[in-house]
Length: 92
View 1 (cartoon, rainbow, N blue to C red):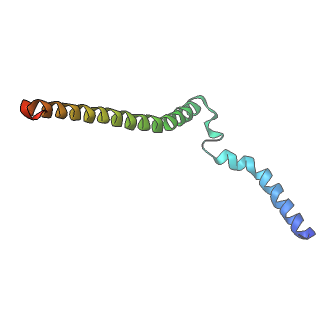
View 2 (cartoon, one colour; view 1 turned 180 degrees about the horizontal axis):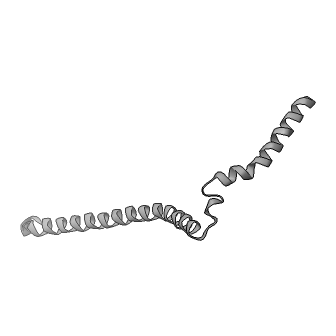
View 3 (cartoon, rainbow, N blue to C red; view 1 turned 120 degrees about the horizontal axis):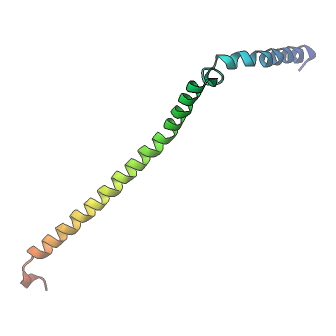
């Protein structure tokens, strides 16, 4: 890299460093939410978006667990009915 390119990159870096606070002010989440109600809304929204996937995953696991138990119960009832319906002479 020659000296002119380095100077250009240094100037660009300086401009970006100076402009960064103005860019951050434009972000709705960064500094605009410094008020009480807005920051609380951002915190509750973040909490909701963090917890929702966990609740959905837990609900799916709970549903599958209950369904597996119901299927096992139905299967054991079927076996009991088959055993009761089999004549005594064929039971061996």
